[in-house]
Image (cartoon, rainbow, N blue to C red; front, side):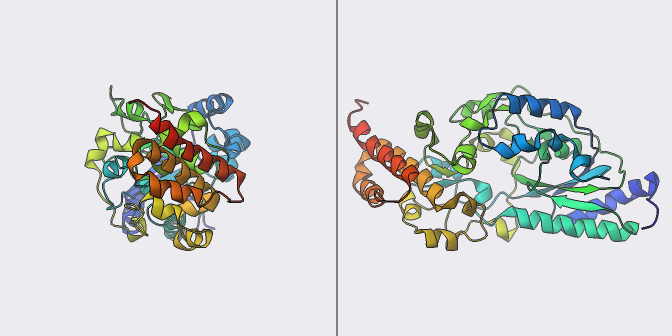
Length: 364
């Protein structure tokens, strides 16, 4: 490999890298240093408080997340990339307001983004290596212990919103990815935080998982409960989940900056199998084979058919409590899986059925 490019050469190269990124479909490219000492302290305090729940991998990697050079020795700077994903889907609030409909987080309506992001980042890295006569690089996208939001913020791709997601004037509906490189690019200057006194994301959280600005207790987060959490959903949180069967977008839907978000033109992110309009009963009827086949290439597949049914059972129970007039079909569906081999699912089915009796005894 030839000697490393000079700082002036790298500075002149930055606009070209942004242009290559745009050609590959990235909506923004930025450059960050490896400095994450403050974020490391915040991470360790968050872990010590137990806010990561059952996500043992968070604690297992610990401070490595804030030390990029330990993850890939030789790394001297990071290229952060963003891809907009907001699909052209049925109105989210309409789904959330209808107890009989299923709500799936906008990011999971289409294909899994991980491979797409890493593939495009890999292409960007190869283009960069060719340009400088060779360099070490590695692409990541939610696939390694990386503080993606902090790096993206340091790379001037946005600021950290009070909901802990990256946010900018175009909203927050985007995926993040990184290229770790052994080239010393000058870091970009982070942008100012524009959340101001707004706390719409905090106020709307159904389970009050956002304890305070920038402080999330994952154990109460619906995205965690329906995706990461493998066991029984806590009883006190089931009614609060509503009809959200995979993830939750409330904090993003409420954010004023997302009024300016544009729909993605990437076909892979558009809804598949009518997941943006499906009813709970439709999705609950899927056999395991149907689940695996229909959701091939989807991020949802990783939770397994058992947890898929668990989540929908909770939503059906909530529908029973809110729409007893639709009870016959809902009860039949729940009872139809009463002999399921999973004790986890059977317990949630029993809870769901109990909500019908609870609604009849509720004087309101």
